Amino acid sequence: MENNENQVVIAMPRIGDKAPSFKAVTTQGPINFPEDYKGSWVILFSHPADFTPVCTSEFMTFASMEEKFAKANCKLVGLSVDGLYSHIAWLRTIKEKIEYKGMKNVEVNFPLIEDITMEVAKKYGMMMPGESNTKAVRAVFFVDPKGIIRAIIYYPLSLGRNFDELYRAVVAMQAADAFSIATPADWRPGDDVIVPTAGSCGVAKERMENKEGIKCYDWFFCTKQISKEAIEKEILKK
Ligand code: BEZ
Figure 1: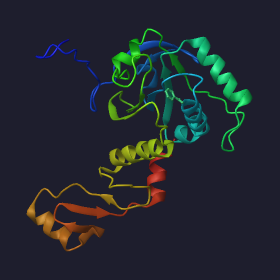
Figure 2: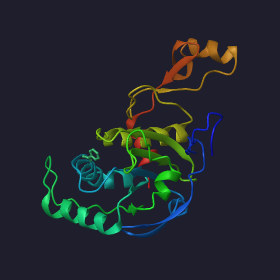
Figure 3: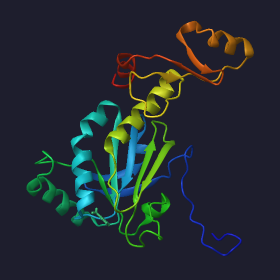
């Protein structure tokens, strides 16, 4: 597809879109995405290349946190435009040889997609020619249990991701769904959450008078407390 200036326009999935479907070969066998993940949150993420240092640090970190994500009903799926045998050899090297920041013997048990044709990477807008023609950037797609893309993060090749932030985002989005709230800057479970803006002057006035345990900074900015235990009970319940 081209725009008015004859530039090639690359279609990229957006927040709120159904996650584009694909079938792929992975280190854990074939997958049918997102259908195989119905009922779970899933993080589909790309890395530039196997046998590279930033990616190795990322995989060791993510694999070490896999159980924590699983408890929050969130599965992990990696992708690079390398082939299956490269993936297998790299993951074996990580397990057998690499000791990094107290992590060793790290087994990557989540699927890593081989995408030598770049079909999936292109479908998900993971190829960014201004950054690299041959490697996917560090893309992260958060897909909800209904197969809808709920958040997207992109990082360049040189910048390793913050996996605590990915976990925080999954928990925050689940909390927003479960409690019909929004989460403020840097929110963590136990911090105050944001209640939807009042639909009428009467409700806004009541809120400003600090009824129902709601604290208002102004009519459009009201918060309430939800305990860390209540959030964890809801999100870590499975
Ligand atoms: C890395 O993972 O270290 C890396 C990969 C591609 C380009 C630059 C760094």
